[in-house]
Length: 292
Length: 237
Image 1 (tube, chains in turn cyan, green):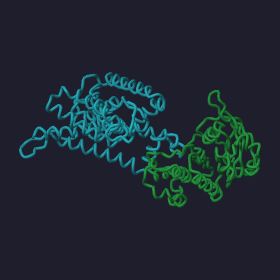
Image 2 (cartoon, rainbow over the protein chains, first blue to last red):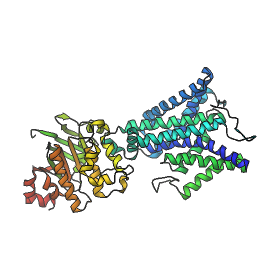
Image 3 (cartoon, rainbow over the protein chains, first blue to last red):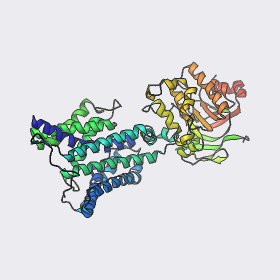
Image 4 (cartoon, chains in turn cyan, purple):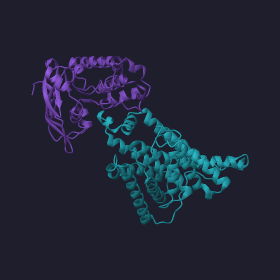
């Protein structure tokens, strides 16, 4: 029973990170119908920047803030400079551009920072809480992770549902031409969508870095799990992304705890295939069909 | 070119590759008046509207709004000059609620947008469905939403593309009456594209008949409706 509770708690905190990556992917999919395969590379870059700022300034929070701001800027630049050219074109073009960007980012990071993974400090203690004499597998840093991801999810929901900018972003995503006819500057909304997504992505990088370390390829599995979580929840739905992340975190935690950690990647693949076979739109999709 | 026209179109030409969709069209719309653009399927009516509002690139000619050239300006900026385009197939955003659709129409106007209350008074059925997704509205309600949304920004020129398409005759007649009233009460210059020539001419001040992208007749609505040869050849009634 203790093991089950431990695995559940662990699943929730890793699931929160998957949820954040999934949110980053969903934001871009909703805005521009592009799956951002470069997301892993983008968050890797901002986490490296955070690592440098932390080691030179000694302040974790300064590095944290710088990475988030860099995420916003990087997202906007990637959209304006690269993706603007392939938006609305054949889907494969965007996939190839995103993959090209991923390779470019990983190669550049290797040249700048080297290929040996380096450690990254957590925001808070990673020693589990002491509950009635036993140490559970949930630390103050896990609490921070879960709370931050919840705050971001709620913040995004409030932005989309409750503000004029959110309304314009949704209109631009659903019907770009009609939105333009109503005076919405659709290009700006797309840029903003990418900036927000990269912001959430860089947050995910900061949260997961203490456990996976920082290196050019260290974040690849996170992107795959995040993508699985996004498909699980329905690529269109931010709520689905959050729930999909937590569900996947739990499933992978149980598999890892009861069956062995070598099966985790396989389990994620099984989840992905199962969802695509039984409910290809995802758990929370608004559309009933999608080409897969 | 008639004096006092708010929207003037002169020698406008639009090509889709080798196909000339709009071929040297000249027409004018006055404030407070409805100009109907008539013609069969493929006559270039929708292309004409899309070129005026900036959605298609013109190959030549002029479009002037209140004397200023708007050809070549981005759609979003033409809207800000006071032109509203209600597209064919209504263009409501099905994933947003009725009220969100309406608010969207007035966002760029900020505090100067038409109050929602005013639109709900014009279209009472929309008030009852304000919180429902636009996807759940009937055809007539969607048309109301689409016109109401265009009015949110207090436009000076209203382009309407086939507002009666797919509507029951009674609903269609109501929409036509409303268009005529809006033009008069709000001093709007309305350019109305319709396949249903009879109902369009019943409320229009002027009519322009297009065939294969060219203007083949431009006259007072009454005169056109009485011209039997024209009716037989182009208008089908």
